[in-house]
Length: 220
Ligand SMILES: [Zn+2]
Image (cartoon, rainbow, N blue to C red; front, side, top):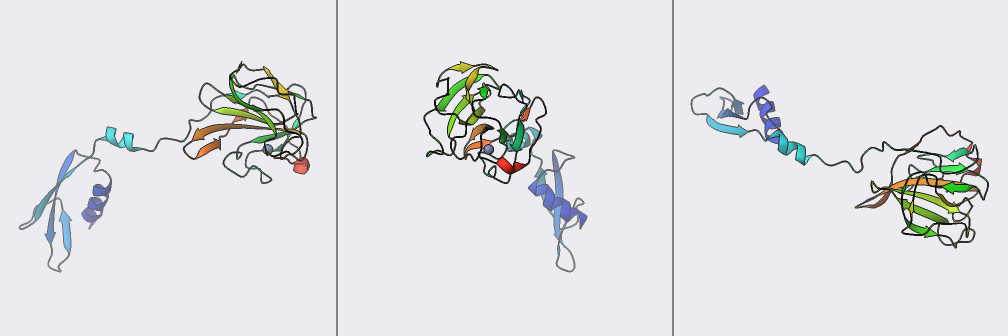
């Protein structure tokens, strides 16, 4: 019986101890099919080939994204400011694009600076108030590893970079605001990566602790 179980597993995966082994199939007195590694009269022999480990490694699914070693410096000047909604926040950080975003409450007009070097790939600077786009005014910076940082809800007319421009850590980007789907002045800072399913938010960490506030001013 043990051999039967082993054989079933072996066919589906790998027999770890040998490159190939022979098992024998026979039918016992009760009519049950029996597999054994010993040859008995009338038994039918099977040779089981082990698949090569190198091939198994290739067949493993690739992770969607590598773990982020980079620790983000705080993307603003001034403060200290507090986190009002963190990763998996149940107010609005519930979808794939924003799951690991953080909201930091700060007065409108706070200088927003690049937390990581890269190329500005998209900006919006003209939105007034809630407007049509939930992001409000924003700056999207593509890093050299292909991930994006997005700085959202910026003050109208304050975006000082344009698509195609390279920025380094500390480069001024805009002033914070309260545009788009935002119920109080804050910065929504998110790191995203493009996948086959579209943009997804990926976990990140600041390089220093940020205090938290109750979520009384929760925004998007
Ligand atoms: Zn948010």
